[in-house]
Length: 265
Image (cartoon, rainbow, N blue to C red; front, side, top):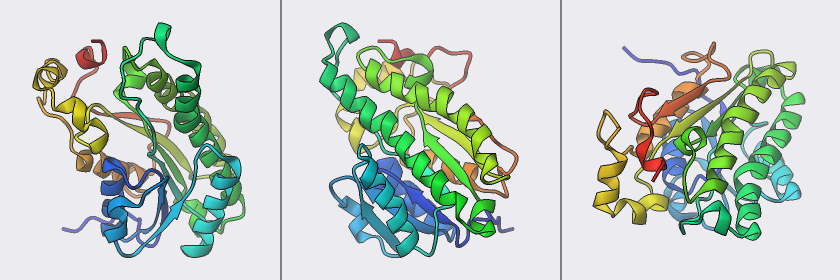
């Protein structure tokens, strides 16, 4: 039995598409027949090896750059974006307590991880106002959140604060606002724990750290990018998740009855 996700020929824009989760999300949506626009910041990376996508560069911190991204995506990939996957983000690797964190670090993390999503959502919704009915029918915003946004993360308070704002500020706000533009539009957040991506590679080399991280994780494994990408596709599907709205979906192999130990150390 085949399962139709209802995403064939739907225009999907994925930000941060050159990274681990982003790249796998691109591949997943292509397999489902979507028209994919893949955003990158400074380097194409493995996106250069993927055909049948439109790859576009933009600085998500810059208002004009984001506006141009949505316009160019529509012009080069068959019309306005229907599904926006806000996947990009930075996680400063050096441990810093809030007491020791520079204002420059805080401002830059917020600019990328929070202001960027605001600019993207605003440009997307403005473009959606002028989209045809078919584009609006599949309208969906999906944020990539984090367990850090739910439990906090010592030494990375900037990242945790930004993710929490996406998950508990923008998601419930926008799920009420999108329907004024697209009556069946939905906004949700998919929130991983640790994922085996290049961003986390150095941290996950520490086997003792990984053991602590999995101590309260019932599934006893670090997620793969595919684990996250598949849930994004399910959440984007108007067939499978057409009545799912304003949800924070934890994709962390965990349970709400457990403290996220690795985020508390």
